[in-house]
Image 1 (cartoon, rainbow, N blue to C red):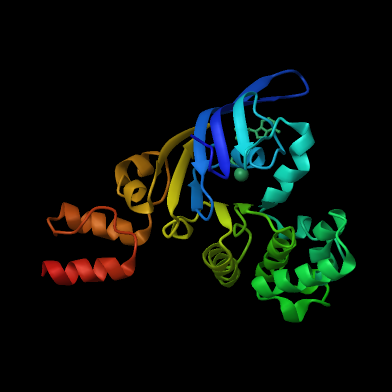
Image 2 (image 1 turned 45 degrees about the horizontal axis):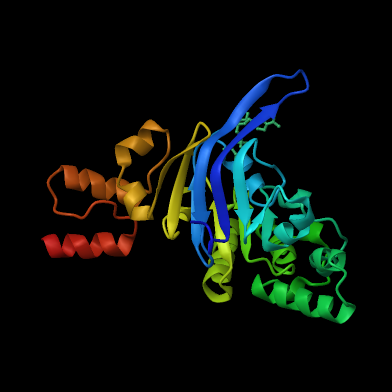
Length: 281
Ligand code: ADP
Ligand code: MG
């Protein structure tokens, strides 16, 4: 197990220790794999350990117990730190904290410059990364003038320019308006589908998880569910007990099922709902 997976989390527990020495267990015995090309969504309410887990994926945190292996490298192996960081790129919630340069293209060039690449290669990577997120025409603009969605796409371009095998996005749409959210989501989906980049997408918007290959649910530092969106979202009562929303289409399908309509469990898409209703009438 774990040989061919990109991210392998093996029995990981993590304990935060405060300055006063007080300990808090934020992750408990978590095991999961992310395979090349996979799109994994992670959901769970505030404080369930999602960010703590994400920080283990590129060695920002090291397990208190257990191991995290990225592309075959244990994150505890200091000598592989930069290989790990180049393999798994991180995008965070607040785009303003991630943009450092005075122009968009300088910002995207920041990572490749730190890799010590020749300037022609950097130029090429910046151009490709900006094209991949649909921001080419903003190359010479100042980041602070952009919308939230545009800023987040520039942050994603900065990560893509490092040519990672995987991007981990920790609630990247939380601070965006609906238009910005859609821009960012379609960018992430395109990078996954057309560039084959694995995605770990942490979100509290259920509709952003419904077309993932797999959904992982975190609760109190534990992974409590893992499966396809259909498998996870049909567990309506359990999700609600965890104070998680269920996608509206799934809710509607579930109420109709309970009223005796003949619908399959775990419907997450409007198309499927319509088709199933037509067949059953
Ligand atoms: P999520 O991202 O799901 O909201 P986090 O991983 O940020 O959850 O936090 C998990 C738990 O760990 C929370 O109870 C949080 O208060 C605690 N925690 C997070 N960061 C620290 C820290 N630096 N020191 C102590 N406790 C922390
Ligand atoms: Mg978080």
